[in-house]
Structures are given as structure tokens and as C-alpha cells.
Length: 268
Ligand SMILES: NC(=O)c1ccc[n+]([C@@H]2O[C@H](COP(=O)([O-])OP(=O)(O)OC[C@H]3O[C@@H](n4cnc5c(N)ncnc54)[C@H](OP(=O)(O)O)[C@@H]3O)[C@@H](O)[C@H]2O)c1
Image (cartoon, rainbow, N blue to C red; front, side):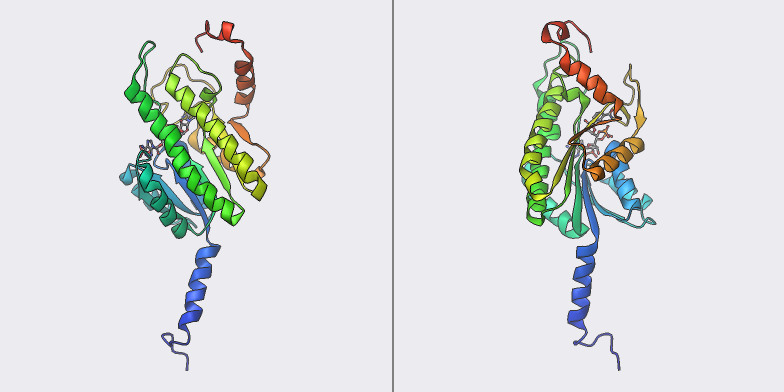
């Protein structure tokens, strides 16, 4: 007779449960409560991924989880402030365990406070270093260690075309995005040896809460379009740095080639 609670069946069921966890396709997105990060979560969950979604606004993460509940994958919300770097190790371990085999790690958290033309504000600068750069290092370090040990995975960092030059607008924002690109390049050079791909994403203008109300935007794309391009580029494994959309690559190339004696007279 088949007794479902038979002790003889128990080890079989445990093994079955473990293999289900291992076979689950997993992703983690930091900065998942709005904009590009939330759009990436939606796309991955629709494809069947279990996605660890990290941000401070738990209400938005819960709403995302509810919105996605009929999709093939699921959202695992985690409320966290990336400024709390000592919490990152345990938080990453919890999510990595929960989501199954980690295929994608995305660092999308970012802040860009308004800065006046002659404003030199250390508090705003510190916040940007904390969120755009230090938080990225703390989270990407964890992902790098896991991907290195499993010898697979794709690590994606959302930088910006704004990191290509030190413009007048927001010195700290430009500096943190430049720093992030260099940090990711180092990770790429370390991890490519074991088959791990590191993609630096440099979006142009994307319609998200970060750009809401800003003047002078052009070639604006939706967060979902940005997410679609980011995932397609990550899977292709051709790009190390991907401007999104691609036409910003031409803009970046021109901007990077302008000599300083001209660039300092320009208001771009
Ligand atoms: N929109 C654009 O045109 C554009 C262009 C180039 C690059 N980018 C970059 O794209 C990335 C995503 O930005 P977005 O446009 O999608 O803006 P967004 O909607 O404002 O998203 C920013 C995300 O970062 C999270 N975040 C901010 N501070 C955090 C903190 N201390 N701890 C944890 N999470 C934090 C926010 O979550 P909580 O507030 O809930 O914590 C939110 O989920 C950013 O790195 C941004 O610099 C955007």
C-alpha cells in the first residue's frame, strides 16, 4: 500500500524538493521597485524566473509581487537600503537560496538628485556615491563570488551615458557612473576566465520616475523597451558595454572625442 507519509518515501521527496529548487531559474534585481528595475522584474517573471526584488519601498515591491502572481515565475521581495552595506552579505545569501539557480544579477539602483549650476553639496554627493557606486560594489561583489564558484551567470550593471564625461550638470552623478563602468570592467576581466558575462548598460533617456519632470529630453524610450533591449543584449553575450538604445553609442563616441578645451565651453 502506498502511504504518502511513509518514512521510506521521505528521502525521495526531500531530494525531489531540492532538485526543484536547483532547477528553478533565478534572478536578482536591486533597485526593483520602479523604472528600469521593475520592468526587468516583470519581463523575467513572465519568462518563468523566480526574481529576488530589492529596494526600500516595500509597498511597491508587494504590489509588483501581486501584479505578477498569475505569471509563470514569481517575485520574492526584499526591503533593503543599499546604503546598509553590512546587510548585503546575508540579504544576498537569503535571496540566492530562495530564487534557485542564479542566472542574472542586475544592479539597477540609482539616484540623481537635482543639483544647481553652482551647487557643491557634499550630502547629495555622498548619497550618490552610496547608492550608485558603493551599493553596487557591495551587491556585485556577492554576485561575483557566487557566479565565480558556479562558473556561470550574467552580471548586469546599469550605468549611464552620463558617465562618459565629467559634465557640468551633476559632478557626482557623472563620477559615480564612470566609477561603476570601470569597476564593472574589472569584474568582467576577472570573471570572463570562468565563463561569467558582465554587461555594463548605458541608457540614454528612459521614461521613469528619475526623469519625470525633466526638461530637454529626447529619444526617450519606455522602461519596458529598455528592459527588453538589456535582456536581449545580455543573452547575446556580444556586448561588454551596451548603449540603450544603440544610437546613444554614436552620441557617446562623439562626446568622448571632444577635446577638453572645447568641452569645458559647452553646456551639454
Ligand atoms: N531614467 C533614465 O533616463 C536613466 C538614464 C541613464 C541611466 N539610468 C539609471 O538607471 C537606473 C534605474 O533608474 P530608473 O530610471 O529606473 O529610476 P527609478 O525609477 O528612480 O529607479 C531607481 C531604483 O533605485 C532604487 N533605489 C534608490 N535608492 C536606493 C537605496 N538607497 N536602496 C535601495 N534601492 C534604492 C529605487 O528603489 P527605492 O526608492 O524603493 O529604494 C528604485 O527602485 C539608475 O541607476 C539610473 O541612474 C536611468
